[in-house]
Amino acid sequence: MVASAATDVAAVPSVGLRDFTTADLPLVARWLRDDRARSAWGDPDANLCMLREPACSGQWRAIVEAGGRAVGLMLWQNPTREELDLAGLGDIPTSVIDIDILIGEAGARGRGLGPAAIGLVAEAVLADPAVPLLIACASVDNRASQRAFAKAGFVALRIFDDVPQGPHWLLRRGRQAPACG
Image (cartoon, rainbow, N blue to C red):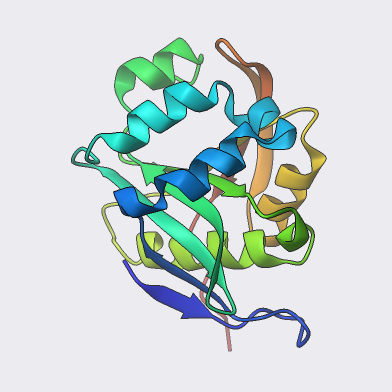
């Protein structure tokens, strides 16, 4: 998937997504070993092991680029019934798409790049009528992630236990209602 969009702030470079490849692993490894990433993403070695394997059906991976420079990683997937049930999310259908994002470059954080990248994926995914909504989760302590998803049109539904990471907000975004007029 390759996509791009200008952000709302003129001083922020345009944001795009390009396919993740194994050539990106050294950069992503550096990002995942950062203390901020580790607190949200957990064990960097386990994540790198997962990223070394080809994505399964219903899983997608992309590098977030800003001004042509790699700044982050996005993953989105159809969660399994087992994953949803384990988290106490039995009311969520498996036809949803779950989004994860990491803005790995410290200088790129807090500049609106995350919401722009999330918005690119959201618009593309929700164009598929088989996808009823998008979900994401953010630790109750991760205010930056909560803000990024809110700016991309997600709303907080409830707190749930994301085993083994602990309490997280379940965030949701559906299709935008058509304008009346």
